[in-house]
Amino acid sequence: MIEQESKEEKKIEKRNPWSWIPSLYFAEGLPYVIVMFIASVMYKQMKISNADIALYTSWLYLPWVIKPLWSPVVDLLKTKRFWIYTMQLIIGGGIAGVALTIPMPNFFQFTLAFFWLLAFSSATHDIAADGFYMLALSESQQSFFVGIRSTFYRIAMITGQGLLVILAGFLETRFTIQLAWIFTFGVVGILFVLFFIYHRFVLPHPKDDKHAEYSRDQSLFTEFFKTFLRFFEKKKILLIILFMLFYRLGESQIVKMAPLFLLDKRDVGGLGLNLTDIGFLYGTVGIIALMLGGILGGLAVSKKGLKFWLWPMMFAINIPHLLYVYLAFAQPTNYWIISACVAGEQFSYGFGFTAFLVYMMYVSDGEFKASHYAICTGFMALGMMVPGMFSGMIQEALGYKTFFIYVVLTIIPSLFILKFIPLEYSYGKKKTTES
Image (cartoon, rainbow, N blue to C red; front, side, top):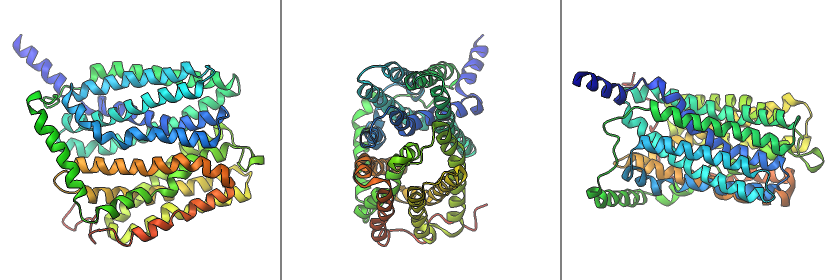
């Protein structure tokens, strides 16, 4: 009997990673794309102005900006396993709240409130899921499954930007816009209730997945604040922070305005595409191009090092915004030309974004690697949030043509900053001793 109980404990402690990693990282990626992309598309269909969409949905980045500030709470209270399935249930409730408040007269304010709940729950879920991943797997398993978790996160992006938008577009042709989005969000809400049930029973119980002892609270918080102090003691930290804030300045505004530009009617300067077109563009063509650009960027850095590729990648993430200048002036009707332009911009973004990711790893290297990387991602999110907030106002003031020219010119701050940031010559380059 005792032997049988021991075997049962081992079975619970370690389960086949294939049974939970794909579903866990799909559940991590889907709320993010709902908050960052689908919310804007839905509000556009419901006739909210570009300025209001950009301003209020950009605020939804805030939970990811300040995520490092409450990450110790996930360690102090309960287990990471508990946080994962609890956040999934709250995410499901938040999505259901969006669906239920869409028909209300003040739907914009009510749905934004539930998107806020969704954003905070999703950011907390990220903290718990990434921590659980390291606790539940051995070092070799972590290395093996890192590509798997990334793949299923991307599949979630495809599902959100592609399938869900296409579903909403299909339903809009048969029902009212409100009913279409109520049904779409209802489906996702039910999906997250199923994720909650599944992970409640399937996630393993690693021995090290424990909350911190209360007697250790003081030292834990002391170490927490020490990590912040060490980060800001880094050499040329002000330039490093400016790099993280300005490197994606153009992209922070394109990511908000591009889908709205594609959806807007031609008589106001847009391209007049429908939701099915947008779903295909971003959910298939765009994601594939983005992934290919990212893979090529990673190979390039490992071959020559970050120092060699930093300037070309900085141009790669900014100069292709000229494709939107072309689209705004030419307003082509050929769907394949539009697709090629979006794919080109997404491919270049994936390639250029690699430099940003690798540089954050460079900055984070040292005693507090994980915490410093979290701080870097906070600055990255801040650099996306603040410019995105005002992008709609700028676009409405300038019009699409001038707005996209302005976005191209936002490369200028990076041209000055990149010349002075600290960087070792060979960082990121694969060593000859590595297999």
